Image (cartoon, rainbow, N blue to C red; front, side, top):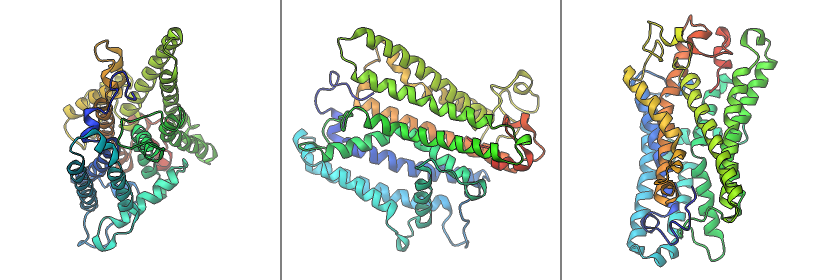
Length: 412
């Protein structure tokens, strides 16, 4: 999904008004708004997200709540980006050459957004502690690190999982920088996702899955070294989770090979396409199963006795804190559909739709939206695990569960 030159050989309509650097910036800003709404809604449902991620509580009742502080930061980011876009429109007026010449404007906006995350803004009360905590956690997880449960392991897992949904956005961020720094290049020209070579962008896209893979292996080694491993299990939960993240690598690798295979080698192209199709199917279905059965602790894929248990709705669980059962069923369907957006390429009528820049942006947005929805139910499941008593392994579908050490042994 890189924008086929045969489909859009010139600067496309979307890029004239909304160049790639702005699309990256908008998705980043939406992520902050989304996190604020996650915190707000879950707080309304009496789910204490800060305590789950071991975030310091408010020392005074006069301090802004966590979601209010996040909204304030999102407002600053939104105003900055909106101002930059409006000024860019005033200078370029959808003229292709002007759009290319004024690429420094959207790139400056990305620099300002980065500064708003990094530079202390205590006097403006713009979520200073939250931004510092985010950067500190990001540094740790960027090398695949994982805190102990008492130090915020769940926050590390949550952030690393979110990064996997931003893999393509991270790739586009590199493309912007590469095009901006390339001689005679422009960050607002038609996106060249081969900028920097055929390997770098796929490698960047693979990094978030590598991070989670390493975290799962760390969890497995912790279980193996634990003096309670006889009751906690041998760590199979974490091995299975690691395998799930490893299924992303064939998809990324085969996609890169398909882009670079010569047009005359039809046999190789067909073989790569079939292998890519199988890899996508395995990755999507495995990930969907994990979302429902492990991340959300629903019983849809459990045995018939648990799935049809009379004390909870079919395929769900006893405690439902987010909403009514119908919402859970709808979210399961949405998660499956958004896990399979790659299937657009299977239709002879839609196979090129996913190559348009507008379609690429929409698919990136839908993946971020899917992850935003996923967070509600992932956090809900973690809250139930930490506040329920008297539950056994079969109640929550966690094979490595140990009642006394539940928090330490659980992973996404």
